Image 1 (cartoon, rainbow, N blue to C red):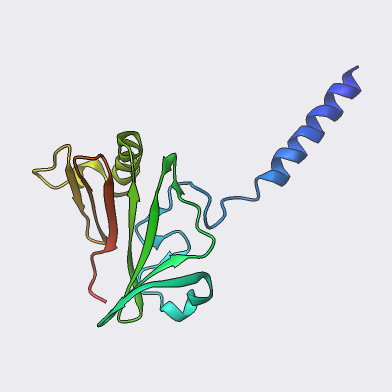
Image 2 (image 1 turned 180 degrees about the vertical axis):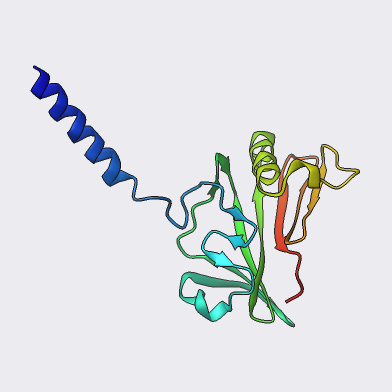
Length: 158
């Protein structure tokens, strides 16, 4: 009986290990980093990631992209859209949207974790919260319909 239990535990641990190859690029974990977002680092040239991106909108000096295989999840927060921003061909930020206040609460917690709650800008309220950090600026703006827009950008000029 001991052998069956030990074999079962070993088999179970191997299945768990095989299933958790670590976070993928779209794992839904906290992808908000001081150095960038997911596998993109601030200042990365668009050409480095272009094969994974689809052009969404282009203007003078900027281009907005969406990922072809995007998982619309950050932590436990479900997103409705996620857009990558490149200025002068360099990665400078992301803009994402969510529908309900529970997702806003989850994203607020991730931003507090990443940027520190102490970095929240004075005057933040239920509809608008912003953070200022030497590496990253972030904000959440929610309308009356509870649709929230979140930006996460480098604070350095590119």
